[in-house]
Length: 248
Image 1 (cartoon, helix red, strand yellow):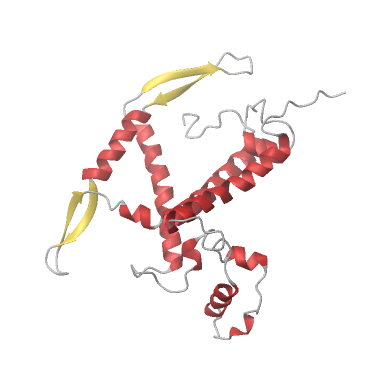
Image 2 (cartoon, helix red, strand yellow):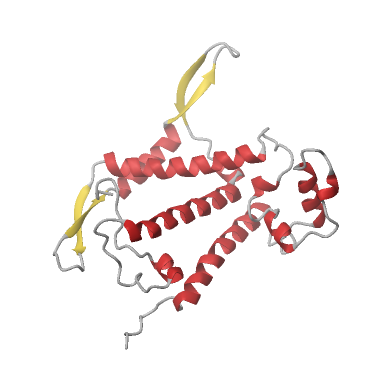
């Protein structure tokens, strides 16, 4: 008889419930923080909001696609909790359209991630060996420890070294200047940034899970190799996944 797998976090059911509920709770908290109150009634879009969105997306201007009573799916899809920038019909006060705001937020999060990767690669670091791998080879992975320095470099960039073009001749000539980053933009788009961050993490986690089945010489994690896809996806199937020539 095959030994029973030693599950944690409530097993597959607990893992699945965590993966489904955690993004929802995160989006709810960011939404309530942005509106300044716990608004239970504003979680789902109203029938009028759904109808307005459907009619605005109709290329022919025919509002017949709108329904008197929207379904739960439509109310969730058009909810301000899910993606505030996706449900706005008109351009916002900054002259940005919903699609451009969503794309901008997604780009910002991706560039932030890549910037931190770059800092990890180029900044001075301490090389620290990890624990011996459980495959019996005695090999120990090497880690670049420079997170504290990366934090201060990032803070310095945001405070005094943020590049921007300044118009000095009323549209005729511009110069490159450095100063404080417009961090208030993060506050204005906080909920949308949370939404796109969740999307990026889902994509990255999915890539790592699929990679664990096809990578050459993949060492599987003991706790993430149960055979249940939900549990293994949650725990991480591959042990210490790496890229960039196994250096990152």
